[in-house]
Amino acid sequence: MSQETLIIFDTTLRDGEQSPGASMTREEKVRIARALERMRVDVIEAGFPIASPGDFEAVQAVAQAVRESTVCGLARALDKDIDRAGEALRDAARGRIHTFIATSPIHMKMKLRMEPEQVIEQAVQAVRRARRYTDDVEFSPEDAGRSEPDFLCRVLEAVIEAGAGTVNIPDTVGYNLPHQFGELIRSLRERVPNSDKAVFSVHCHNDLGLAVANSLSAVLNGARQVECTINGLGERAGNAALEEVVMAVRTRQDVFACDTRLDTTQIVPCSRLVSSITGFPVQPNKAIVGANAFAHESGIHQDGVLKSRETYEIMRAEDVGWSANRIVLGKHSGRNAFRTRLAELGIEFASEEALNEAFARFKVLADKKHEIYDEDLQALVTEANLEAENERFRLIALRVCSETGETPSADVTLLVDGEERQASETGGGPVDAAFRAIEAIVHSGTELQLYSVNNITSGTDAQGEVTVRLEKGGRIVNGQGADTDIVIASAKAYINALNKVLVSEDREHPQLGDV
Ligand code: KIV
Ligand code: ZN
Image (cartoon, rainbow, N blue to C red; front, top):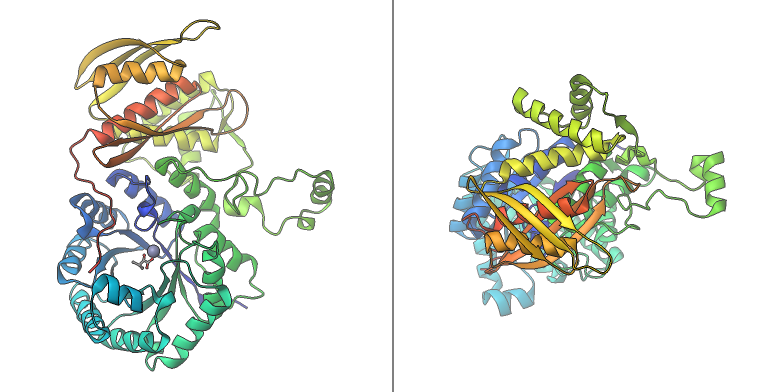
C-alpha cells in the first residue's frame, strides 16, 4: 500500500547536541554524519553555524564529507545567521538552510518583543535571503504547537510564497497531544492556500513522552517529513526517536500510506555510535535499540518464540541491526577477512596504512579475546579514530595494584607533546588512582562530570567501553576508550577527554539567545 516517501530529517548533530553534556567534536560529528548517510537518512541537520566557530567548522566538515544525504544548517531569521549558514554549506553536494522564528503569542510578546506583522515580515525576508544560497529552504514557526492556527496559516502561506519548499511545524515545548497535533497538521494543509507547494514536516519534543506519538499522528494527517534524533537525544526530554518513528512506519505498512528510504539494519550500529560518543547510555528497555528490546525472559514467551517467532515478536532483531553477537573473526583470521567484514559493516579505510594499523590492533585484541564480534570491530575502529585525534597526550604504560586491605595505587607513563612523563598515585580504587596519576602529569584542572562503563559484548572477557565527561571553564567534552581491561579502558577514555578539552578549540554550548 505504501507509495509516498516519508523524508527522515535527522537532527542528532544539532538539537541532539543541545542535550546538556552531549557536545561533540567536529571529527565526532563527521563520524556520526557518515553513519547517518550509510543509513540513507535524507537530511542531516549538522549544526547551527552562527553559534560558534566550532559549530561553523563542524557544519562545513559534514558538508564536505557527506555526498548522498542533504546537509542542513540552522539559522535564526536574521541576515547574519543565514549568511553564515550559507557559507558553511558552500561545499555541500546538496545543502539546505533551515530558518526559524517564533510565532506563539508568548514567544512573540515576551521573548521577541515583536508584533505579529513584524514576525511575518522577518520570516519572509529570511526565506528570501536563504534562497540566495540554495533552492532548498526550510522554515519553522518556532513553538507552532502553541501558536494561533489562523496566524500560523498566514505565516506559512507567506513563507511558501517566498520560496520555502519545506514548512516544519515544531511542538517546541512538547505540549501537544497526538489527536490534537494530527488535527493541526491536517487543518494547516487544508487551510493554507499554497500548501501543495511545500512538504509539511514535524519536529516534536518529548516533554510529555509523546514526541513519537505526535510525529506519527502528524504523518497520518499528511506530514511527509519527520525531524528526529538517534536514541531520542535532544533538548530537555529529547526529540522524537528516529528508530521508533522509522520502525513504526515500516512495521505498520497496513496503516501508513508512506515509507522511509532507510536501511534499518544500520539503526543499532548508529545508536551505539551516538551513545558512545555522547556518553548518553541507552536504557535497556528502550524500544528498538535497548539491550532488552528483543529479549524474552518469560518461559511462556520463550516457548512461543521458539515455536513461531511471530507469537511475541513484531519485528526481526536482524532487521534493525542486532547481529545476535555473531562470532565473526578470531586470531587466525587474515587481513582479507578483516577488511571484508569491516566493509560489510560500512567501514572503509582511507589508506592501506590505516588498514594495516587497524589489523595490528585486531591481532592484539584477538590474542586477549578469542572470539571477536562485530561490536568489537566497531569499537576497535572507533579507538583507532580516537587515537588519530589524540594529539597531545598518549598512554604509554599503566600498572595498577589492587589488593584486599591495601590502598590501590597506579603508575602511569604518558607521552606528553612527544616527551615521556611518569607519575604514581594512590586512590579509592584502581581507576581513581589511575586518574589521579594522569592528573598529576597533566594538571588539567578539569572536573569529572560522568564516568560510565558498558560491556561491548557479553562474558567476562568482553571489552569494556568507558565514557568520561570532563568540564573546564564551561566547556564539556566526552572521551571514550575500550579495552578488555577496564582500568586501561578508563585511562584511555580519560586521556581522550583531556586531549579534547585542552585543545584550543572555540566551542560554546550551541544554544543561542533568540531574535
Ligand atoms: O524545537 C524547536 O522548535 C526547534 C526549532 C529550531 C525547529 O528546534
Ligand atoms: Zn527542537
